[in-house]
Structures are given as C-alpha cells and as structure tokens.
Image (cartoon, rainbow, N blue to C red; front, side, top):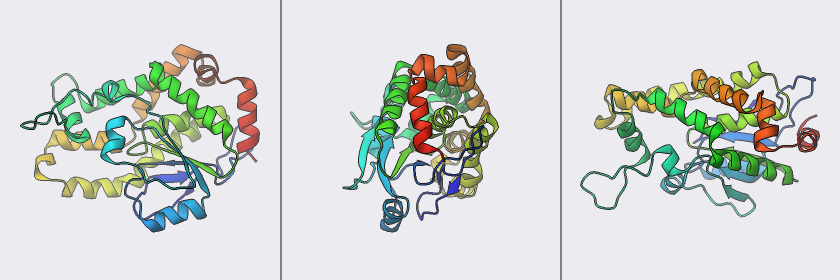
Length: 271
C-alpha cells in the first residue's frame, strides 16, 4: 500500500504495490481507499485529480451520512453513490432529535442512543453491521455493482470511501484483495492499518469533543466509529465462508463474479 498525504483526510491510501499470492503487484493509481471527502482542501483535490489521476468516486455511505457531509463534485470525476447498507439497516432512521419536530438525530447521537441499553454494546452493534455487509441483499447488490463499475473503468484511479474509511471501505477492500488473490494476512494488515493512521487524531478528538460526548459511553461509540476491529472482520469472514464455502467462493457463488470477470480484473489491475 502507498500512503497518500492530504491535509484533511488521513485515512486514505493507494492499494498499489500490494503483492498477490502469485507474486504480481497491484498497479499504482488504480485503487484508492479513503474516509469521507467532505472536508478536503483545494490542494487535496488538486493532488487527487492530478498526481493520483482520480476519475471515479464511489460513495458507500447511507443517505443520511451523505446528506450530512456531502462529497465534493468534480467535473472530470464520475460519481456513484452505492450505499452498502440503508439508513434503516444502520439504525439511522429511528431516532428523533429531542425537542425538535421532524428532525432526526445526527449519526453520532443516533449511535449513542442505539447502544445505550445494557445488553447492546457499541461492539455488538458493529459486529451486527459487519454480518449485514455479507448477508443482506442491499450489501450484495452494492458489491455486485461496485465490481461492474470497476470493470468498466478504463482510465485513471477509482476511489471508494465511507465515513471513517475502515468499515464499509474495509470490507470492500477485503472483496477487492480477495478477488486479486492477495494473502489473507496482508488483507488483515491493510484493514488494521487504519488504526495506526487514525489513533493520533482520535486521541485528540476524544479530548476536544463537546462536553456531552465526554462520557465513557459516548467515547466508546466514537472509538467504535473510527477504529478497525479484527473481531468484526472475522465475523464477516465467517459469514462469507458460511454462504460461499470460502471468501472467493462467496464472491463467485453469492455475488456472482465469474472466473472470466476475475481474470479480466486481475489483468487490468496487476503488474
């Protein structure tokens, strides 16, 4: 993986250079994984469009998340919003802001409310979400469409992102690297790399959030939102194996990616 140094988004990297089981490597400036793009500076945009040759953006967030922090619109970039899970599947459509009619809570407050009961922790919520990435028709359809867009990509880089850049972006990276025959230990290493990048920022964030978020529970939710959890990734792998026999079998038998399609993707993306 190749770090991309931006001013306003740290959890972003090029998958270029990643080695496959047969000794090939992913081409540079083809696949970029990222967190949200809404705060990018003009210098960040210029670097992505110029040096990284960004030509396609896929937003994996739900409608609520995309509306709260919309992506920038660049004229030379093809943009697709492919929600991995809907607002309802994430639990975002169920809570009203207190004292404000017809206004729903923001994402953070919703997650705090969702996990406030004694029998449903932030980690249990995230484990459930990871299983949904694999088992729901919504997520399966998004994955199928993602690979269709990837296959149609003729020039430049494809960037895909969610909010923090580690859950939906992480699982889509699992699908991509699996299809390219990257070893599982390398896939897990890339997944956990988000924590090394995010931790310094998160430590600052936890100290500077408004007072209402300075509780143990709110801080646990913030950590859940921004830190990768290998147990959650394992839950997704378990579901892939249950449904498809193997992770690659899941992509073939459940998502419907044929051997011919996988061969074409490898030929385009690998050196």
